[in-house]
Amino acid sequence: MTDFIFYLREGIDHILDPEGLDHFYFILSFCLLYTFKDWKKILGLVTAFTVGHCLTLFLSGLELVSINMDTVEFLIPITILLSCVNNYWLILKDKKSKQQLGITYIILLVFGLIHGLGFSNYIKRMIFDDESIVMPLFGFNVGIELAQLLIIAAFLVLITIIERLIKGNVKWVRIVVNSLIFLLVLKMMF
Image (cartoon, rainbow, N blue to C red; front, side, top):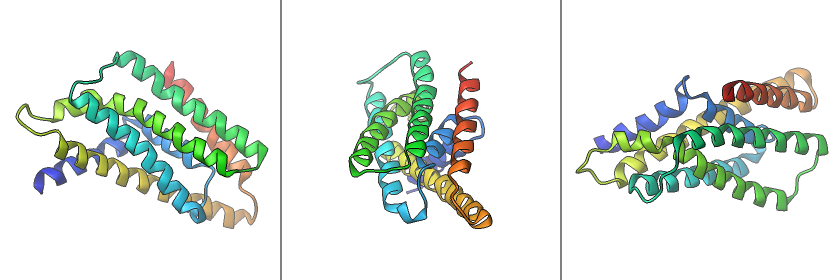
């Protein structure tokens, strides 16, 4: 059990690390359109992302998948920018549909695959030669999921407070936050 706790903490620390803001930006970008009443949707979306993430970490840990890290480091900010562009479209369109939610699950799963590749070298360094890959990956991904849910909960609390303070639609707040994420990720890319 202590191995599980070690890897769980590693997963949490990895997401909450101020050096790894790309993951933080991505999480905010995909939960930006939701409120607390959408908690089931958000849980499903973050889990789809984590499943994709876990799958590539597992395949990479077994050395079945390998991709140039420069390519991965380029693709990760692209996923965040695409999420932001999608947010602009949905905020300005001001409509949500069930079909769109299904597509979003698939997109987050694919984006999770890409982000998982970014962690692949990190997880390989964490696992000892004689150690099974199952416990480290399970603990690490549970830690990632918990940290993501913590970030989302904090963000939703903040949006709820802002909504109550201004007593109205927070559409403009979502546009400003989305724009800020977009600009920060562009800066990160260059």
